[in-house]
Length: 393
Image 1 (cartoon, helix red, strand yellow):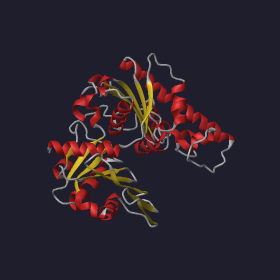
Image 2 (cartoon, one colour):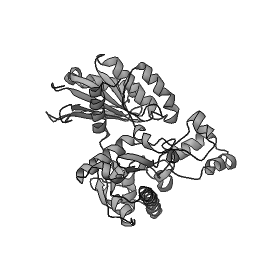
Image 3 (tube, rainbow, N blue to C red):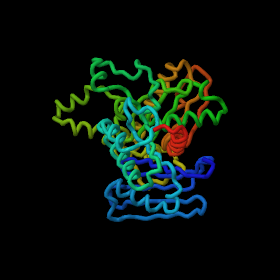
Image 4 (cartoon, rainbow, N blue to C red):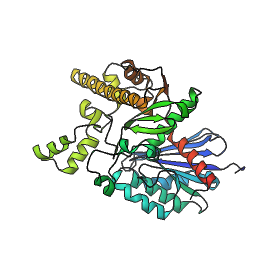
């Protein structure tokens, strides 16, 4: 691979596609873009080409129907780069117990991965549909590589991933803790170790991926040993719209007392809870910080919050901070101390949040606090390069 070639990374979310093109010599970004509001009106994309500094923006007032349509637009947009791409990386949220390392994708493997779609219904079908479009629209010599969010957690011990329910539900249905945000947690830990100039294999690390979805992971000698998300991304921390840890009997109580059906309970816990459920106005932590009296650099909120909204914003903030502290403290105990606490993600990169979380936390060891800008796409690109170099198919 002496000749410079390029890797396309496709990171698809529920209503977005983030895409970047990297060279295979230093992993420099040569093009990056976002496609947002997919499936809604006023869909739009932004693209920036690094060398020329050229920026392209386009709005679709009537909207882009789905991710397949959006990705076809992207394929046409990348122009002359298209024939220079030799590998495409796809973030795939759920790989179950079978896909514990990055793998070259084909139609047969995609069919095998699809059986996990019901465990990640908002992401897996979209991730795989994007892979199918790329298989159809690039030369057969261009390899598509699936990089799994669950793969980093393959090192969890059985006592950490099993739930205390009858064992046959794990044996027959594979109900267990899988963990999510693995690509981000692994990248954050590796980058933090580089920043403090110490080998990851010697460190006890707690990584906090804090965004609209949030999770905490304990890492010992480079291996994940505990993580807050579970069978689905609903478990763990209080999140933007997800409840996180609650008494499981609450869902039964809601069904019996106010006759909520299963789908409505699902919607309530996944889309109407968390920060939004308490604050009501927004699930955006920046709004909560502003309403609580904090300044947020680079963010302007014109809303004048009422006294009640201010009170509820402060409550939501306290609950969020408490939940993160609770996990950091318990994971420090599991690790037998901590050397580095790492914050990443849109909320985790905010210095105010880091200060609020760590100021009330007493840990019985000397440790460093490191902020890492989230960059799942770079980690995926490196996985593509490594996978294709090894020729793993």
